[in-house]
Length: 497
Ligand code: NAD
Image (cartoon, rainbow, N blue to C red; front, side):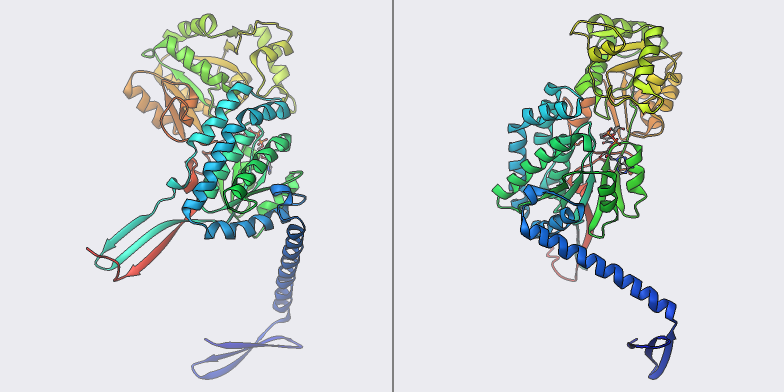
């Protein structure tokens, strides 16, 4: 129905032509004012974008993707995304190959920087994590097409880019997450703006510089990943509200995931876990002790998937503890020492950040206990409600909860996972028990008879990711998770059967 609009003193006049009759409709002034308010917002947005573009033009690479403010970073990512979208899959893959190569070459630098800047983790393990990201993060091969061909033609569903993705990253795996996210997001045809954890900003910027260098060297845009010099909650809020951010990806604790999911935009939420390792009477107990301690101590327990506590059936609990102490470098703490450690680790303000990702030796030193260097994990037995057991600590402290039988063990493990639906592990040779546990705990990851890191493709099959979207259901994210489905229909043609 065609219509024209004319402004007058009472407000707006709309002339509508309906069934060849001319109708004059007066739109009241308030609506007129609302319209003015909306256009002011539009003017503000345009001014913001023009200013941002001027800043990018003044320094086209913004120090290789690092900008003074979030609006400029987003504008740069938007410009670059247009170039990425016009590139072939082969060209995207060339950039990704170079990112993989540079990540391996810089693995040790990134690992050392991460440990030095955050005070968390273990250099050797962080080197392995960077190699894992470089080698096993899916690239463009993850972008696939589904086709239907028949009498009425050809229909395709393709995976298209969202555009510019806003990603918030943790301090526990800073560069690992940033590199892994960028590979997947770029493979999907997107560019990305990061709001990294402030405690890991130097390491995050190093990784962003490295990937932008790879893009430029491979003939891609100067910036495929951007960030700001000083990420804060304010810059994160600007990102969450920005009109040019099409998808938000949050990797971190419950606060950031809730913030992203309340933003009104599409969000992928990779949140906290508290993975229990269940051991039943059919397990190879000696191997279970080794696997659990290896998984728990990997990068000083920083990965969100790592074993955080044990639930063992009564008949094997003592044997398990014996192997952990006598063969796996575990130090058993007394009740009094448990209390001391609790008061150091869990302060009235919450988890003491100075304890996160620290070695067992360093944690024990904090409560006045000196142990040899081969001690890699702190163990004790307690009830499931013990704060060192029920809280997600992210340090090599393993409390063991005893259960009278398998059913009670499942019940306790499900309670300890707190409904995060994140990760859980089991050591058992009874397929029925494994199935029962898997159904009851309902997590994105369930590792059987191996250390937790097998779930990331380290000593297990499958690809690697450091963004496990437990809250929103994508599970282990890869390039396809960062795309939107688009249907392309050709009616009555192109079916050549
Ligand atoms: P964190 O929640 O303190 O910080 C993560 C990021 O979110 C940081 O960039 C931080 O600045 C930001 N942030 C925090 N609260 C925010 C808010 N209200 N609004 C906007 N941004 C906010 O987490 P962390 O200590 O860096 O990492 C450890 C936590 O992350 C653990 O709970 C761990 O389980 C979880 N994690 C989950 C995954 C996963 O894939 N599911 C991966 C790594 C870490």
